[in-house]
Image (cartoon, rainbow, N blue to C red; front, side, top):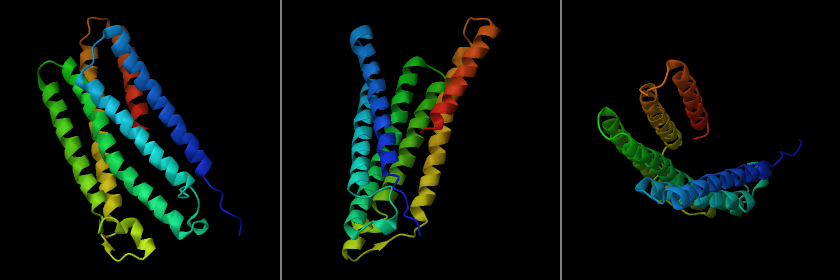
Length: 223
């Protein structure tokens, strides 16, 4: 039977590219805030925090790839590598719950500064509440999917314990992802009404709305 090729190198490249892109985007935002507008707001701080957390997420993932064998077939792993891989996986799932909520919160906080009154503000506040509720529930499911929690990886070290049904986390992930997707569409669609109300000819507004919509679809495909 031919050996299964490791996908580790590909995962390293993907994580590295994403981290670099994240820091470039964050750096540009910080430059604009420091050098041009000289005005930092709470949404900037929240976005900087999300960048830090994502960097920690990527660092943990790289450790899992290099030391834990993430990306390799399970038949090529020993028990020590499996333990490291599961520790990393567990950590990344927890970080993801925070990152998912914090990024969307930053965007909503920015938009709250744009929409000064009316229904959009209520929708944005509701979106923040729903996102944090779903992320908190998802986080608790991840943390306590096994009893004791460390049994998630320590079961391969001979530790006694138990875990919830195997379908619990995948189902929770699906629900969390659906809520995140809906919130992304809400966040993306809200500004369209502002574009539509611009004092510009319809022929100029429609291309703006089209390209904005394409951007929403593109961003959603990567989050």
